[in-house]
Figure: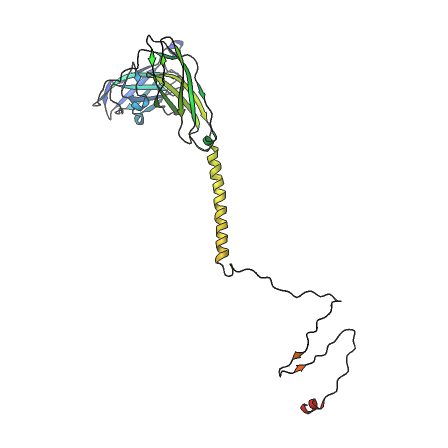
Length: 326
């Protein structure tokens, strides 16, 4: 790329200046940073002089297209014609997503789309950033568990215009990846006199669970004042919670199931009794005499008792009564 083309300002040209919904136009440009990613949108309530008054909320975002700048600083991309959410005057809005924050607006007429006057400007004051912006604040413990991350973007601005600026309205937006910023209007209370300066603090908040690399942009009067990167860590507390839940719940269900099985099985609820066993006797322990054993007729028969140390007893004499039975 030649030095002349490198020093040239970005420019955009359209294949035609008017078109109806459902048609298509070709947007081409020169003088852009090589390799930069651009976002092409059709926006309402906008003019090349004032830019996109309502931010990207005034644009047909769903029908936007992206384009990559070639090595020569040019690009060409077809864009479908869509009706923006705001009335015309309309523009084709070309903004750099990566690289330099260059913005070019070219007037375009959407045939059949309603028109309305632009809202009154807040004054003749011109605000410019005097120093680099910064993000103040820190993430609390709840952010680790998926709560929305919050910061304040702080920038020092000066009034370069001939009149004072009272209660200026800024547009603060956040973008992630190749998506264009979604701006929200925030009013700063105060007056900045001509030649004066002020320190502006504007709150910024992301959605719950958001993480990754974000970019915070601040616009005033349709122009981007600052862009500040913001790296948001992953909410590891949510991951830890689900891991613990995956361990605790199965363990609790297992214990409940075992308790139910133990309760419904036969004899599960009855107390367990130990079986009594006979005591073990040593060789010198005294023996227990079971006593006489009754016979089948009810008479008590005397059983001889033998011990290892005693001799066998002599046979007893048979009584006459026993003889008679024999």
